[in-house]
Image (tube, rainbow over the protein chains, first blue to last red):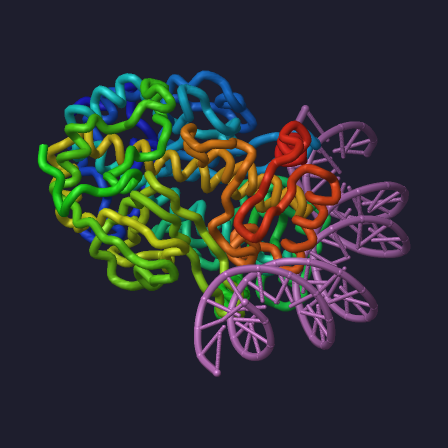
Length: 243
Length: 243
DNA sequence: CGCTACTTTGATATTTTTCAATCTTGGTGG
DNA sequence: CCACCAAGATTGAAAAATATCAAAGTAGCG
């Protein structure tokens, strides 16, 4: 088995697709694809390493590739006529993006950190799906997984209170931590406050006040701009769950 | 080709799956499944006819079937600890529901009107997917389609103004009208105001005031509880698009 | 060390929620 | 056929929360 384009660093190989099965047949935590299948996918993909703040594609531009995030963070967003911006999703390693609608991307995407991506031509993918049901099934599970996350988020946004929304966001990020990460109470915040505000549909100021409130109540401490330390998980969970 | 369980009435056959492809290869409006494939699906499915207000399954209950809506309307929802209810989706003919997470349904579902559903055992479906990539692909497109709708909704909910949210909802419903329907300006509202409020994450009162505002501004007239007549499509679209 | 971008804080305005009461409508039974 | 009932829907007034506008404070980076 040859490694293409040199030896990727740790965490930069084609990652397991992050998802849980929808049939109850897939055990959580078990990768959806065997390593053989992943190797097969690799043959189709081009690896890209890109710096932070790079626009991957624009809203409504013609869709040619599907992307798999292997390392780093990407945001998917839309700019509204009013000048507001809504972040549709943050994409972490193991996440897929670039699913299009009638041949056009729906959201714009931009790297937040330096990223490593695998890029697969959509027509190739369609062809592969025709011949490889197992591979397609992995994608189906993944998209289903993302659909559930989107629905969950819908419920998040239904909340009135800014602090509760932020709590849900932090718990969401915490859920994305790899088990290998050192301290599960340290939540890295790769994105800016402004990005979080756009994600939670809050004004930047409301977002800032919400984080101040979480600190005041002793649930979380924000250490610098890029780390949230959970101080009282029990109460943070409770706040995130409620409403 | 035999019709099982007698001759279904119009609109109660296994419907085309409502979706647009994500590869740009599927022409909008063209059914994802050939009639042969639909017939194949039929062999696996059980047809159910149920009255209005029937609970199809509870939140977090073990998932055994996937459902395809053939006729009528269903709501998918979650009840929150506070007693509030959030409607995750309204499901119309051609919609699929019952995608589970680790073997359990995520939302509860209830029929709004009398419905005709096709029910397919999940394990059967998994088996079929293994052997029939084309059929699986139709489902993949459908789930992708629903993911986009969920993301769009996320943006809807990000709006502050109740009237704008209601306008977006009405435009969404209008998009679901079949081309065969008589007057594209008559939007049937099968669900209650309360359901709409739960869908838009508004209080019932705010919902009511929002509809009053749309009427006052001459965009829509609500004729009885179950019909919205669009009076000024241009301005309604504008209101729905803005922000 | 200073610039620039990002973030926080303060005060006011706008909007929605909440609580309470009234009004409609559709269905039922006398 | 009509009156009544109950669920659903509307309206009003006060309370709570976020948006907005404005200004000051921080931190990262060259």
